[in-house]
Amino acid sequence: MTTAPSLGDAGLIPSSRYSRNVQLLRLLGLAIVVGMLGALAVLAFHQLLSVLELALYGSKQGLVADAARLPPEVRIFVPAAGGFVAGLILQYFLGHRKEQSGADYMEAIAGGSDIPVRSSLLKSAASAATVVSGGSIGREGSMVQLAALAGSVFGKVLRLSSDERRFAVACGAAAGLAGAYNTPIAGALFVAEIVLGVISVASFGPLLLAAAIADLLVRHVSHGGPIFAATPGNLQSVPELIGVVATGIAAGLLGPLLISALDRTHQGFASMRLPLWLKMAVGGLAVGGLSAIRPEVWGNGYSVINSLLHQPWVWQSVLLILVLKVFATTLTSGSGAVGGVFTPTLFVGAAIGTLAGSVVQLVLPGASMPAFTLVGMSAFLAAVTHAPLTAVVMVSEMTSGYSLLPALVLASLAGYYVSSALHPGSIYAHSIPQNHPTQTVPSTHL
Image (cartoon, rainbow, N blue to C red; front, side):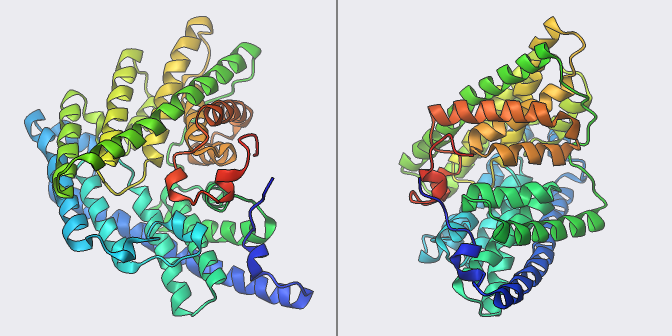
């Protein structure tokens, strides 16, 4: 079995003790600075979205609330307008330039390339247009990209070696994830487990430092806490744990379906002989049509997840919104929109967990519904990312639901093993080279 070289194995940590200590201090200092820069990038993009939302809708109460206040006939065309603007930016300002190669932070870290400034800024502008107009895609993708860009630019300004610049980009990505989700440990784990394909002390320590610095700075400025603060209780009895494992298996069966749906939608739009701006407008129009049925399909799904955790829902409404949200996400992403599907994935998992909890409560009326909502989030995230450790830690940090750790582990492992057996590639397979360790290790490797 092949293993991935860590950042430490790539030449960043010399062999002699003195040189090793000096270089480690250098890397930790670099991680601190990049963590701060990453936090500023997250805050800047968040502020941009807030300003745009206030200008368009006259409030900053969230996209679902904005959509609910709009008449259905207006709600239909707003995502189409956003797709049109985003498509114009991508097609006529960015164009098909060579500098787009390696612009994704995952490709940059895996391949050791720099992140182009111009294409990243233009893609972030296009992402903002899609997000603020109700596109079903995550705003966090651009936050992470901009944070990684900050690391890349800082590395070039200091004229660091290629390995050190790669390290700076990785720290920036970890900082961006931590700042966007308020999850410092999961931010570092995501980069190590999914992007680097290996967790080593030499690389994980500085990544965690950068993520922690970013999280602290973002929390200090925004006065924020856990994104999905909840008190889910425990799932400890044997019948409850059977329900937990069953939820994980269900997530593992459904995860590959979402991955395949995203791939096929991308291929379908790519085969259309239409300009990009028109494809994205068509995708936005379809999302608008879905939002006329339920406004909850707008945005990344944060507000709906919070509602599922804190308010009772009838299962029919949850199922309807789940189906509509999956269609909206695949249409938004497939049409060419720039943004992450990480947060919509959390939404899908939350809905699956809520539905599973509804079934379990038929047998065990005292079972905690919020607990099953969180179990579904972790299991489905593990199923689509093939990173169960990241999924468990991220859901725990986002919710402060540490009492659920054993249940989250069971569900996430079940979701991971079932999904990887059915679909060896994760949702990030296209962003990572085929010879990368995350693509070559057996599916049983944790």
